[in-house]
Image 1 (cartoon, rainbow, N blue to C red):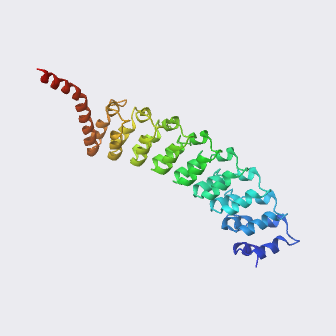
Image 2 (image 1 turned 60 degrees about the vertical axis):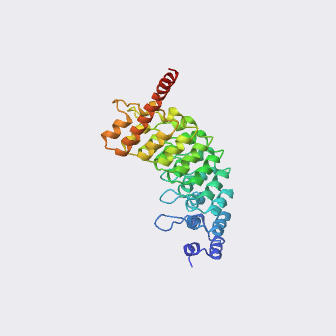
Length: 341
């Protein structure tokens, strides 16, 4: 049986015989296989063959160059193990003296680290192993890919709640990482909000690393995370914002570059459940309902212009209630005067 077959079949005796051969050279360990030009160590790592990986790492011929070798996608054996969720293999790499901080923080052709790959694929145990390692630095945790997205952003996009929780709990995850923006000017909170990942939004809002300023942050269009959720009708996400102490009335009544509030955006797009969520909130005063954009249009006008019948009805009911409430003190005084006559 050839060595590739031994590795692919998890034949530990065949691998030991190969590694203990007096004819073994470093070049033999760097031979490439399959269409991605993977080394033997990569093949073992991606399959989770821990005993074979340990045998390679223990071999004198398995140098730092062999361990840090990359395939056609720029991925190392460690990255492959992290991507495929083999936490025990990742631990073996991290425990090896041959594995350096530079290897752990290496990036592929998309500038993604092993941590990012684990975050994308929801490999929580791998994320824990990496975060706990001294070889995983703050710089690695806050690193960004070609879209300037961090591991936290990638986990948020994929709705990987446990990974988000692990990252936020780590001392290596700074406030700067939580407030970081990608090429579209979106934070992790915005990315979770627009996709309706309510549990991720809840975790972010609950974190001490998430500030009121982060909730009020705007993208290149001047839109906040709340606005993005309102536009797409993510009512559960909107409710999370409305219930959060980190989302004050000022954040709710914030306007974009066209002077539009989140309520206006929801009204214009016919998101009646979102509109009702705003109207039911104590943080939504009558002034917000009657606010106008740069064209002098209210949320009600936008709903009427776009034929949003249910939204129009909800807004008119609120306006009527506000009018009645304002009139109530005057009516009460009149009734008192009548009673005194």
